[in-house]
Image (cartoon, rainbow, N blue to C red):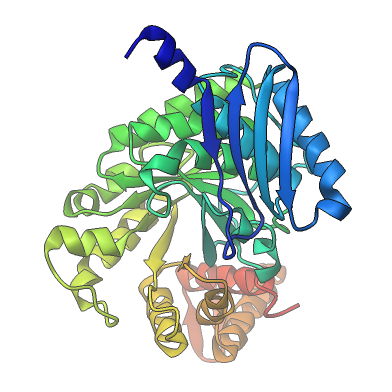
Length: 404
């Protein structure tokens, strides 16, 4: 193939999806030219109402990316501006153009920084290549949303997904949910960080973590990018342990950086590594899960459980969540919005637990006011660890909205 032919191939690119089952997306086919200006052909069911707006967004994105001459075909399936910009940018980059430039949508106000120990009962996974799941994710009231760039994204779509996730962080209001991103396994995950850190996610999930050095590599990369983009707010880390080696190194991973706020386990990969069948009872992973909880506590970070994969089995999910809480986990993952409310129910303290804790806290407060060094409840003496546990339970119950 001649150099000229190669250049012509590199000057065209496609991105996005269209079709009867596609929503909130845009398919872009772009051919760069040497002259003739920008020519856009638009197909959209809402062209009569929003056609001019779509064209204006497309022209702005092309201008931001430095294109002045190109033929562009757009098949719109109800894409919002942040999706239009992301899909055009992906197509332009696939054409070998627009390097060093970005098509950024208008930004929504940045939420307050997430506290290191904030409530993390539920984290809702959203496939990073499917914008239809982004728009209303916050309405389901998860404690966190995860824009997933790893397992839910086909290898050929990784480049486009990280651009889409970046624009979603910038332009979508997730209604108070912690804004998190699961990057790809290293070293590919470093390229994800290059794209997303500028939009200041609250947390980054690190898959397939087995060694503290992997966390340190991500931590250093984020620190460099924060300095580059003049970011001062914290960006927390949650390593995902998904192998026998990862579990054996759980404490070293959890204690590897002050930016680690939580550690979690990926049971599909972990059981595959062991060569055992993953069951709804979880007997085969009990050792790993209890070891992870112990390591998290020893390192002063949160222990977060894996997902429950059967989205039709809400009773099984409730039982799993209740057992997880009993083991010491503070939350778990969700693969469907319907799971969020069930997970919140599973991790909520019972009325009996709350009543007992409130009595302990009241007895402690009374003892403090009277200058007593010993706390008693009825005829029983209350040790300091029991008081601390009761105080934490009452605090969490208030954060969950279980008590005023």
